[in-house]
Length: 150
Image 1 (tube, one colour):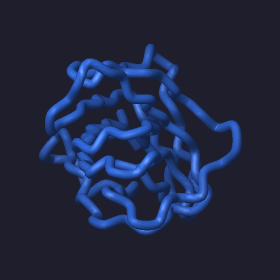
Image 2 (cartoon, rainbow, N blue to C red):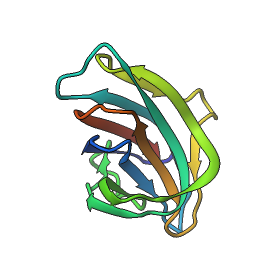
Image 3 (cartoon, rainbow, N blue to C red):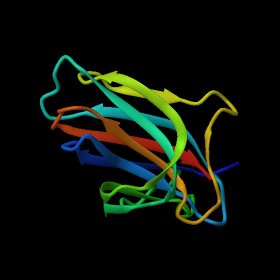
Image 4 (cartoon, helix red, strand yellow):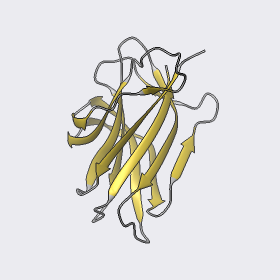
């Protein structure tokens, strides 16, 4: 059975498109994203934000590198890594939206994969999955928690 891991990223969403969290590949394994939670902080209004989950081929520059946490304390360290609050955006693959939906700012949204329907992170260096928001003027904080197995 595969080991399960989680990572959380937060970002001030002060620009029109901000990558909040990336899950970055390891060349030795293909991770499978099976769950994520999206939320907004600050003073949310009665509006929506467009949330995107896309594939990338270059990880960009993260403001921090949160250490993935093993959900089973007996599991080894994660092979996949993560980044948050990017100052340089990842190089996203065109037309690679795995998730593209509007979410109400005052709500928390959780997605769970059906069995066998997980999003796969390829075993290719610097590739992975990135969570970002697209909006016109929201200046609060966004947060993503992602869970995967490898």
